[in-house]
Amino acid sequence: MKTIALILLPFVSFIATAQKGPIYTTNDGAIKGYDPVAYFNQGEPIKGNESFTYKWKEADWHFSSQENLEAFKADPKKYAPQFGGYCAYGVSKGSLYKIDPDAWKIVEGKLYLNYSKGIQNKWEADRDALIKKAEENWPGVVKE
Image (cartoon, rainbow, N blue to C red; front, top):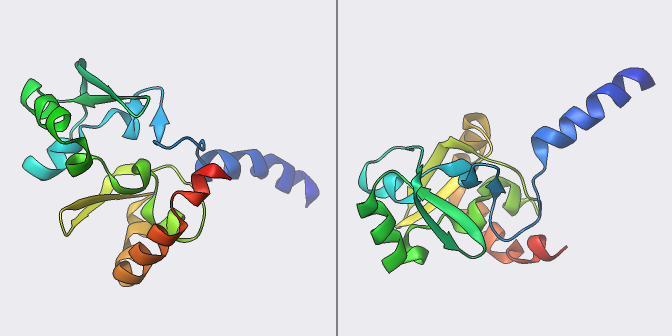
């Protein structure tokens, strides 16, 4: 049994945790290289293009068009996902987890991302309370 645990432990850590910077960033950029403005004006996740890149809060944000880049530059707080783009459910539990760009929701004009569609369903079941808890936990989880 110990052998199985030792084999799975690195995998579980890899899929569950994320780095601890203020913005969730991968080699593809902030929020896995997805265009944060597209969630608002196109109603779906769209991969950004490195030709349309803007550095904000020490992260490279990619956009699918010049128009989206300009909208973000004019008001990044309007478009940037909550909790630095980390999983909103994870932050409500006091942890930082990576996200699936397809697990998203705009609530009261704010973009929230989650680890997976399954986790998003759990988050949706008690969304308002979990958002409140995540707001209480943020940014303390980043500083740990």
